[in-house]
Every structure is written in structure tokens, then in C-alpha cells.
Length: 452
Image: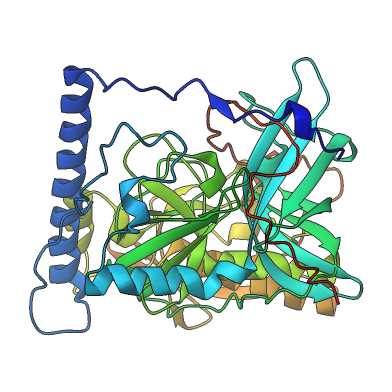
């Protein structure tokens, strides 16, 4: 993409402004935050009583969104001076958050795209270096990079999308789109091999997210190249977006450059990839799903989805009243995934599983979350691809309508030829349109050639 140094202007955004929000708007946001805190605390107490958290004492409830001294500052136009960047927080937790962000900083890049049209489309987000393959370096990011504004399930023609990548050392290089997936909203971009560290997308313990904890969302801004961070906590609340595997944090992410960035805990473990949504919470795709997307692409050139289409929620994310009702049906509180929907097109592969059932175990593994269920299914798809035949997955089902526990067999196989792939698409929230102007970024002359 050609530089336009003389024409470069600062990015503009309709949502940006100097005026403080009206009083009624602030009251509405405060009320929404209070509701969120009450839901989180109630859910935490109930799930602790039903499932425990590995300790013998009731944990003290924590606020869903820790206060920050400058979170309401109206001087933050570009997100660089926002509270949750915590550049001025020298508490023990603030320093741990900064160290966690810096631990992945060299692997974080900013990605910008430009697509011709009327009007032209521009977008910028964050990506993470995950692999070196031959003469190329691979970066995993969000498929929002090529989605059409205001259209939930459509993307630009990939060949028409021009990509530039800003590295941590403020060097700009050309990028090429290798893959995108509209179910998990992930994409992989390739650049000429660069001497950059890769991150490891390691699985977390299956019960990791049962106990909320402090986290930091990390990103890199395209215009300045600066590392950005927002602090918060993970939540045990269901995400309202289409993708069942998504989880939530209270990192208040409003700028689109955080899309595709990493969520990291204070022990420097990667928890997932961030997206964006309206409201006080930020959705993220758990790391075990992100890692399997990369693994599938390396092996098959795409993400091989099992033709099941089961939609569900982690049981511990259900409303308190519904969760209590279910628990009364069984001698001890169940664990697993509550089934919300089974598409007719793929019901034959679901072994008699019904809407309202609880998937409790798969091949003897006790389920705790939808992300764990999806991880097991993606693993079985690898077996099916290797053996070139469908694979049977033995499931233990708990049925709240009559308190029964039954066995079922799920058939893990690829999509039949000719079947519509609508089941394999999700809608995703895109931020308001932002206009970017390409040119030499506003950098401090720090460009060393990292290439091998």
C-alpha cells in the first residue's frame, strides 16, 4: 500500500468529542454497571454454593468493574490516556498487569486494511504472531478485518483487501490474508518472515473460568504504534453475541484497535482473543478455541467444523432461578452445557440429544463450559480427518424435564456435500466506522530491520 505522508491526517471518529456526556446518559451507564455488579455477585455466590471453587470458604464478592481514577475522562480521544491503560497505577496489581502486558508486547502487531469502494472501507485492529512457516510469519487476528460495515455475515472480496502490518519496532510491512472463519471470527495474516517471538496458545484448566480473576486486555494502536492496555476481571455471565464459546471480561474496550488483541491474566497466561460489543463488558474467544483454529489451518488449510450445530450455554452461566430449578431435579448439582438449540439439518448426528438437555460428559470427560465442549469436538474432527471416517463420541446426558440420566452417541463428521454452511456463520458486532489515512506512522524513528 503506497504511503501518503503529505496527506496524512489524524484518524477521525464520529463518536469522539470534547463534551461531557449528558447527566441522564451517565446515570444510565451507572445503573447498567450496578445491575452488572449485582448479577455477577449473585451468580458468583450461587455457583460457589452449588459447585464450589476448590476452597472451603465463601470468597468475598468483588465488584464486576473495578473503579479507575480516570475512566470517565473526556480528554481521552484516542484511548491512549484512558484509565484502564493504568500507566500511572503503581499498586502491586497495577505493576503485575503491566508486566503481563509487556510479556506479550513483542508479539503484538497492529493490522490495517483498505478496501476500494464507494465509500472506501478502512479498518485497524491488533494481531498476534503465532508461527513462522518457511519464509513467512503468521499472525492471528479477527475476521472483522474484512467484514463489511453494517452487514452481519458478509465480507469484502479477500483479493480486494490491502493489508499493512505495524510491528512492535514501528516498522510497516505488507500483509496477505491467508484464512478467515466466520464462525469464530478469526483470520490469519501472513507477512515476510520477521524475527519476532511467537506466543504459545496453551490450554487452560477446564474449570479455570469458574473463578473470576483480574485480567488485562492488550493491543497495539496503528497510528502511533503504542502498546495499549485495559484492566478488568473475567465474568461468569453469558455473552449476548451469537458465538456460544465467547466469554466476558470487564475490560472496558471501546476502540476498535483492541479487536484481535490478547486477554492475559496477571500470571502472564493468555486467556483468549478480544472482540468488541456495546455495553460495559468485552467478549473474548477462549484460548483453547483460538489455538485449535491455528492448528486446523496448519493441518487442513481451514477450520474443520463437525456437522452437529448444537447451540448451548455453560450451565453455570444460566440465570439463578433456572439453575436452582435444574439442581432440584438431581441428587447433586450437575455440570455441563445446557442445550438451547439443535438444527434440524444436523439432528441425525446428535444421537437423540434434545433441547433442554445437559451435556454432562463426553468420552468420560466432565464438561464445565461450551469452550471445552467445542475443543473436544474440534479434537475429534482431527481424528475423523486422520481416519477418513466419522468418529463416535460417547455422551452422558442429564435431562432436567424428568431427572433422567441417559447415554447418547454423537457422530463427529464434516459437513455433507451440498449442505448450506449457514450453521457455520455467526454475527459479530463491529465498531462505528473510523477513517484511517495511511502514511509514515507518527513514530519516533525506531525502525530496525528485524528480518532474518
